[in-house]
Length: 498
Image (cartoon, rainbow, N blue to C red):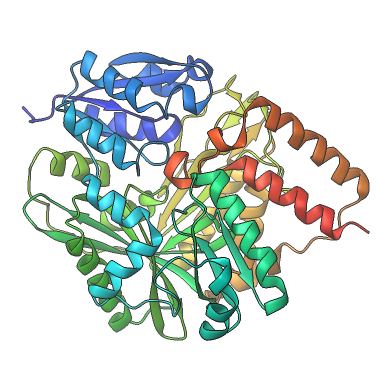
């Protein structure tokens, strides 16, 4: 029998269902937690047991550490799996589990704390010999701002020290934009993370976003499962990921993997984590470390034939890491979000029709069902479509076919944007960077009527739930925060309207 016999899954949606399925295969009982809005959710129905947490707002349910840990204790759980978002990168939640005698299936609190602070993470990375983007290794204030930017050299990037999920980031191309961008970055960081500290680094031109999946056990072993290319992004939110990154040479790939493992060792890491890098012109630079399972982990699983959740559970039970298999073929993941494909505005409603894709090498991670209500309380991601092919060309063709098969009626989705991306010459060539969507997705200026409609809808959302409580970025809610995306869209429309 496994050392861990019952796990509380402290999350919702597709990732909760994902963890429950692996636990069931291992003969482990599961306890789901749910809010008022999730009473009928699939993860609640599939778990062995379920505990009601409270109201629909994340602050009343999934983000309430006391309620979540109490549910784990009361239901006799040996361990707690945080998924991603919500409490997954919260050192207080990890410590609360330890204090309650419940295994937290994630890294120890000091590692979460160190890597959650982007300024501290850069200092640790520098000591570990990991290449950094040129910039200041400390927070910057208004008095030192202009001199620091001039020292680093334009264009520069202002980034939230406690950031994640694309929040609190501003690109500044010339000095006259600097002060306004600084105040905007601080305000957004304060609203999203409760911390307005900002640091400054060089903006890398034509960067590719490449990340390394690492896993560490309690015996000091650290391994990596290759890289994922995550450059197809809108407002720093990933939309399409693939593995491997065809731009990397074998030498750079090996160097990047070693750097990721060295950083994990430097912070005493345990469990699954991802070290993110920028890659440009043959060189790579440390970006950040996400101390959790990533949304895009299935891309790696498809190539390496590994169940990363199973490895997390095994590591939590004190077992040594399994050997890493040789990767096979090419894998692509597309995130399917409930949003208008023209405005990226979140879409709400009830799913009235659903058609799932299938066939060789196709995987759909979702908690969708016909009749499901898409509410404003949580992030907009509905599903992840993942495909595997013998090579990149087959994977692209397979992904396009599966995207056409997938039908979700009742809410608007990002499927057209994903399909347009995979059909583009730039993506198919493999020679692309983080600006690809801006080039593919050029739109005419918004009309005043559209701006007025979006502004009214934004006001309704903010009345439903205060932004600071419900859209806590990566550390609070996940890789997508629809309210911030919506407000950003409204602001851009305002500026572009004649």
